[in-house]
Length: 82
Image 1 (cartoon, rainbow, N blue to C red):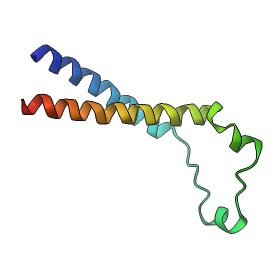
Image 2 (cartoon, rainbow, N blue to C red; image 1 turned 180 degrees about the horizontal axis):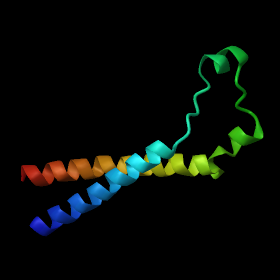
Image 3 (spheres, rainbow, N blue to C red; image 1 turned 90 degrees about the vertical axis):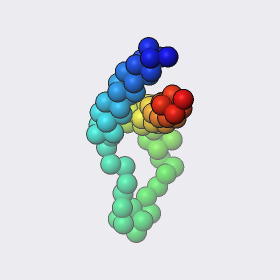
Image 4 (tube, helix red, strand yellow; image 1 turned 180 degrees about the vertical axis):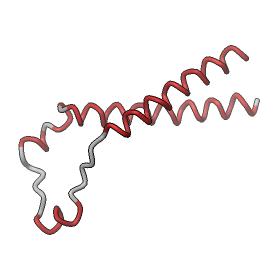
């Protein structure tokens, strides 16, 4: 059981560092008040194909790593309680 705990902690640390790196690499997408007043359009070509861009891939990887982070948190919680 100790080996499994150490492996999960190692994976957890790698996920944490990767998550921090990806979050800092993301660009700010929020157009703020000017987008609200000017009526930012979501029907242009870039908005429709956003998932295929570098920013879209970074966002998808961040979401996946965040889910893995939560799963590892629950797993470590269960391991340390038992």
